[in-house]
Length: 93
Image (cartoon, rainbow, N blue to C red):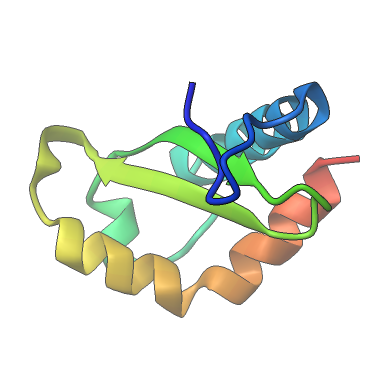
């Protein structure tokens, strides 16, 4: 299990919320919720989401299927991060 920078393992609550965020983000990307040519042309997987101990910030690890075009996908996700944050917030209670 990955440890946080402080050396502590994540709590059960961090893991549970991270998994909820991961599912929401994966669903948004899978269903084409983001209208960006770089994201529509690529299947993006979300293998992990790590939450801070206060559950305010999430770090999502993403990877395009096959590993090709990762730079374009990261730029597209950065361009659409405001939309993605809002959609994830609506889906995760």
